[in-house]
Amino acid sequence: MKMAIESWLAKAEQRTEQVSNPQEKASLKVQIAKIGGEIIRLNSQLPGLTEGTSPDEYRYVSINTDTGPIEVRASPEVNEIPHLTVTMQGFGRFNVTHTPTGHSVVTNFERAINAHVCMARLQLAFNELGVDLDCDKEQMTAQVKENLKPCSCLHGETIPQYISEFSSMFYREFPGGCDDDPYEEYEALLNKLKGAAS
Image (cartoon, rainbow, N blue to C red; front, side):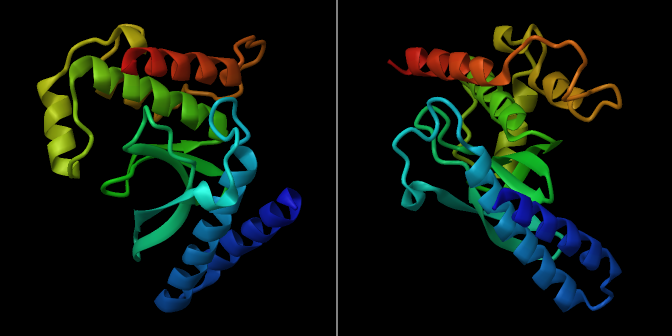
C-alpha cells in the first residue's frame, strides 16, 4: 500500500507543477497533503509513540500553505510534546510543526524518525529555557530570541543554531558509516521528557 501511495504522490507532484489553474493546483496540493498524512501514519511505527494507538487517536493539524490553511494528519500526540508534531506537507518531506499555529519550525526531513528526534530535542530545549509553546508564532519567536542560551540537550547550541543545521548544504540524513539508531535516540529522548515531567 505504501508503494502505491508514494507512486500516486509522485505523479500528483509532477502534475501539480504543470497546472496553471490556481484552483486546480490548490486542490492537488490538498490531496497531496492528505495522502502525506497516510504516509505519516504508516511511518509512525516508533517505539513509545504509537503503542496502543487506534486510527481514531491520530490528530489533524491545520497547516499553512501558499494557497491557505489545510487540514493534514499529524503524528499522534505525545503528552510530553503537546504543541509540536510531525507533518508531511510535500511528498517525502517531513516537518516539525507548531500545532497551535500550523507553522513549520524545521522542514524537509527525508525520514519521519529524524523529524521526531528533532522535535523531541527541541521540546527538551524549550523546557530547559522555560519557553511556553502554547502561543502564536510571534510570541514563540520573541521567547526564543529572549532565551539565546546554549542548551545541553542541543550539544551546547542555541535553538536557532540547532535549527539552522538542518538547512545547511552539509546536512545529510543518511551519512555513510553512521552507527546511531534514530529510533533508539528518539526512545531515549522520550524517556528524558517523561522523567522531567514526573
